[in-house]
Image 1 (cartoon, rainbow, N blue to C red):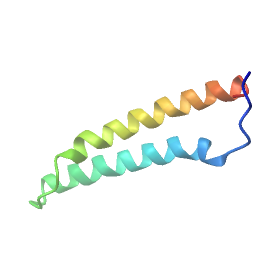
Image 2 (spheres, one colour):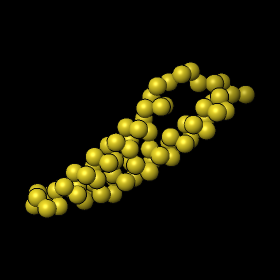
Image 3 (cartoon, helix red, strand yellow):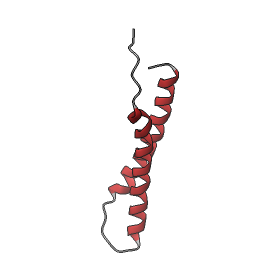
Length: 69
């Protein structure tokens, strides 16, 4: 038997924040390519990872909400 979760706005907000931060990281990395400033190449790996994780979390949370979890 499961206990339904209470309304939690972070469950709705977290995927959007992850996508926004991922996009910001990608834009910062691509913007720094022509500027000659050294910036970590991890930005181009972590940014899209956050975007994908945010999209997956959005669909998982929607699935959970439909089932009342």
